[in-house]
Length: 85
Image (cartoon, rainbow, N blue to C red):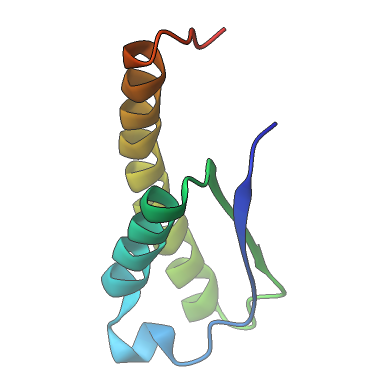
């Protein structure tokens, strides 16, 4: 079983605030602290081309962090004598 952090709704103002990296960092820290397996992003209908571009950048940033966290989780499982199969 995997446990995912769900983020949904509209990310109004996040693009303009320049706080995307802070969101990415906070999601990664939350997942690590509470043992989540990843994040599920449910962003309903990006309205403009700027929104769509921002969503692509956000997903790319989160994918990079998720990849790093996946390696850490895998190493922890192996260290605890649990396989990843």
